[in-house]
Image 1: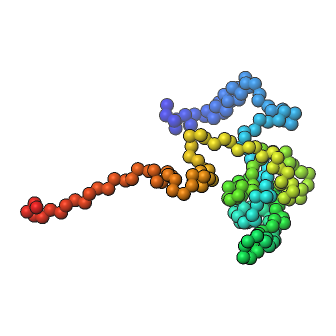
Image 2: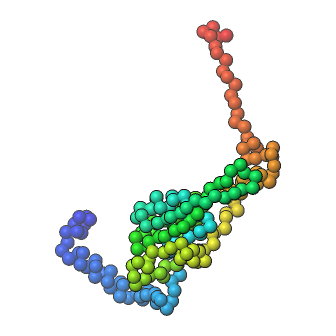
Image 3: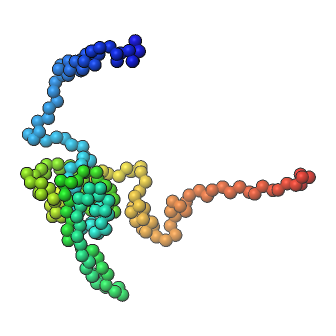
Length: 201
């Protein structure tokens, strides 16, 4: 019988559903005893977002890229006197960094666009509140989550070195040292073909 013929049999869907129910009845249930037993979460699970305040340069990339507009940042500029510099420099000082987790959809765009690794995922997910206004985490509370950020995985020894490692190795080698670009095999250059005339000369 064809596939379309199976669909036209009266009661076929009901029998298929009952078959699934009977199979499930014979299996043992896999209920997790949360909160008495904590779940074993994968290392890169998305819980709450942590802030490393010393890494933040107030570039506002996270707030601009957030699709939910749930990140609020305020800052001011301070002059920094550098010895030997012709004039004082300015730097941004972070005054306010809030994330409203009642609006956040945990897309992770803010973490991906941060150029200085100021934002991190943590596997902590138990921060429910009885008041929705308490889900607005300020920079102090976001900084407290940093202790729960898992350490990054080790680099692959067979993989390419990071840009920072390559730059440090180049500086340590000194000027004129052989680099990957200098030691690369030069491309073979073909000799130009001689033009022939009608006489074959």
